[in-house]
Length: 120
Image (cartoon, one colour):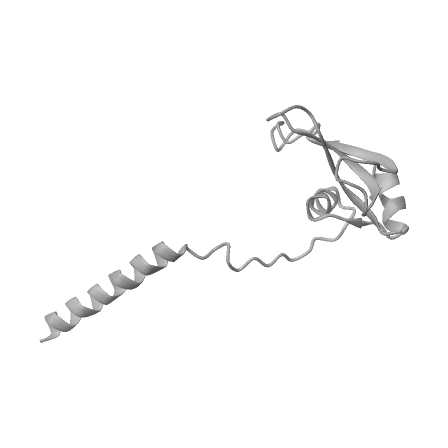
């Protein structure tokens, strides 16, 4: 049985609240889970202690049994010191969009043309 430590959404429309749960990976996101391990309230400020609450003892137990945390839960566990920090690589995030790249190319062409005209 493939176990995951993941978020299960609760709360009303536009007021999200998440439970951090240990669940079988084949179950639906908000469906059946085995154990509730904590909560996450994204509406609270980032420096609030109430934003992420974890039962670290039980999280360690599930990790030792082979449960895999999702990306978001892994970040919570890294912040809590349970998992080592992992290098993330998203090279496309820092690049400008297509139109901005086209504008930059046009600007470079115009600058090169102006330089040639000034040199002559």
